[in-house]
Length: 267
Image (cartoon, rainbow, N blue to C red):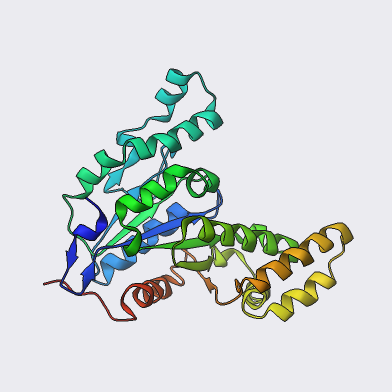
């Protein structure tokens, strides 16, 4: 059974939102904050943890991959260290997806918030990721990509984050909402500069030309041209789980992507 087997008030099926980003970008914290925001606004949602290596979570997941895959047991069974075990565990997610979907079938909800593994590459760039998305229902899924501001403060760092985000979207072939996470840690000037870089390519181009490191600038310029040619530039939103900033914008963007802006309703 996939996510498309669930009806929501006759308007559409349950919608799946995959939260992705590099380690430390704030995915789990945002999932918890967004779930609370949805609850407080009368929108039914469940959370799913897909990170078998998560030691603690800032929310209580309704469905947890750790019920089927234990990282310690994977390390012991396969004689691997933590990194190797994470890779094997990522592949085991696909093996266990049917078990998870049987539990998922017991829920009736509007939104499914899916917290992906902390190591972005373990979810986005392995074959198991496509199998996971297909199981939930590709036509009813979208990505929320979190850019870590600590990695985006320089023009070259920002270009690197943009490139990674574009690769994730290309790999998974899903609509994607770009977020600048943890904006509460930024000064107003730094935040606005990063937002301008994304929405106004000329601003980023100028700052790339002013960068100090010539070798990195050459690479950055080539990546910039590639990103501009593929139409990656557009809109990015600031979000803070700590200060509950931008949560309404996530909801508005998902409603626009799934329903053309109309609210869901349940009979």
